[in-house]
Amino acid sequence: MLIRIRRGWELPESAATPEAVVMGRRAALGAGALLAGAALAPPAWAQPAAQAMRNTRYQPGREPTPEKDVASYNNYYEFGTSKSIASAAQRLKVSPWSIRIDGLVENPREIGLEDLLKQVSLEERVYRFRCVEAWAMTVPWTGFPMAELVRLAAPRPEAKYVVFETATQRDTMPGLRQSWYPWPYTDGFTIEEARNELAFIATGMYGKALPPQNGAPIRAIMPWKYGFKAPKSVVRVTFQAARPVGYWEKLQASEYGFWANVNPEVAHPRWSQASERLLGSNERVPTRIFNGYGEFVADIYKNLQNERLYA
Image 1 (cartoon, helix red, strand yellow):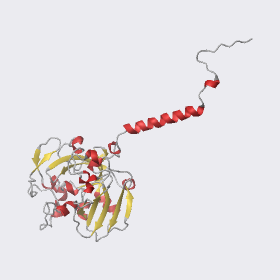
Image 2 (image 1 turned 30 degrees about the vertical axis):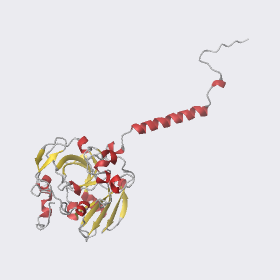
Image 3 (image 1 turned 90 degrees about the vertical axis):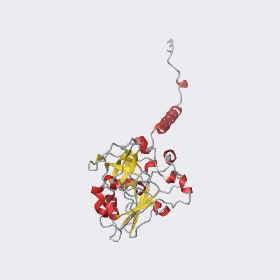
């Protein structure tokens, strides 16, 4: 008679765990790992931006401001009137995102941001940025020339101005409850300004997607103008014949005009513009006419002697 002695590692088949239980546990563990990975993943804006070559035509003459300073010192009244709105701004919903193009254009439409970016050429530009409050920074922006957006919009001949409008997400933007402000935030430029080679549409900075506090996912940059002429989180671009009145001009026209070109010789009614404080170092340096970009933009204004160009 054959006598079989089981080894220590052998078990009867009846002791095996059913396959369905094992596979269910594996699925649960896999889902848990995915959730843990999602919790540890950085926010979308911290992901690398699309690769873009730096355009060296526009030398800033300064080292870029440390990224942490640019990302933590922000004006964005939709999230609050202090400079410390970065935490609150993380609630901004940036995906999906679309932009309405309307007004005096051949084909009014709404276009998704992803579709828009397929039709433009991304590059990186390092620009000086000057706030009307007399502080300044230098930022490597990723984006594309505003002229490309104008081309895609195909404005009609009677369109003389382009207006940018910022998002109004009432469930994420507590500042919108302050009804005395003229929401939504808008500001505009002439078609000639928008087609200027310096005018830029930014979708990233420091090689990453734009953070919410800096205007994610898409904003305007006009480096020769004071920073309030750079609408964030753009949802609408309108072409029109009449000169627009922007958010700050509606609030206080004596302090904030349409042109808002940087000029050290024209003071704000409440402070001098002769110098500026550099974020990151607090060094004060002389302000330059057109923020140092006169060679690219001064000709736009040569026949506008009677205009209030710099306030």
